[in-house]
Amino acid sequence: MSRLLNTNVETYKAIARDAHGKMQKYIASGRKPKSDGSEGWIISVDPERNSLKQAFVTIVFASIWLTAFLHLKIVRKNGAQKAKKHDRDFSYKEGLEILGCTEEAILDAVERLRKCRKELVHEKAFHDRGEIKIAENEADNAYWLIVAIEKYFATASNPPIPD
Image (cartoon, rainbow, N blue to C red; front, side, top):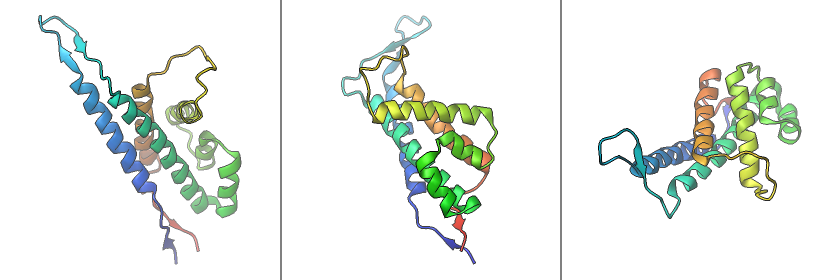
């Protein structure tokens, strides 16, 4: 008989979801229609950088969720030894491929998240890679990925583990 695994995976997802929602509210509150009625917006500066902070939280907790989700699913499918190897040796993309994910949009988005998270968490600002990232767009990708992966696998994040 399987037993349920105590895990924080759903909490990580909730933190990412809540931060993403707050980010969207901060963006919306700083955007007003032009007063002359013409097309476009007046964007106000947020000196506290609230949407940026919430974007960072979304990205980091989506990554934490993904790590936990992959671990749980790989343990369930391939056992604890394979999961331990994944924790050390495989990327997010390789973890999804182990689980049979072939959806290119998901695999591309997970690679984008990996690069973004690495640069954010292990800041290497002095290494110019010739690209500018907008944190809020990266947060949208990160949150989309949670939804897309759960839909792809159509399971709860907290699966029973084998005996």
